[in-house]
Length: 136
Image (spheres, rainbow, N blue to C red):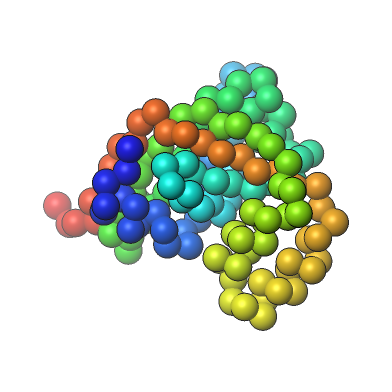
């Protein structure tokens, strides 16, 4: 689903925006860390968040990454999320170390060890490049 250019871009520690559909029918969009794992987008979250409740009711969602003026690209990725436990905080620890310096990450890994974290995995059904980073 991802070409080499998209993979290279999405492997950077950028902030994604995840949009789920709320019970009122409106999008609920939040910034989050993400990780490209093969052909899936992985996001972590505390279990008691609105996005987890929204996904339980409707797993369809969108992830937007990049598109800022200094970015080389921007992508809109649509698909369905599956939610599972973060056994041993594996994904929480992996993403924390991907985004933060070693010292800060180790501090947060310890502080967050008792949080009730879940893993959200999206298998994309569409990937659209929405920003090329070039001036028009």
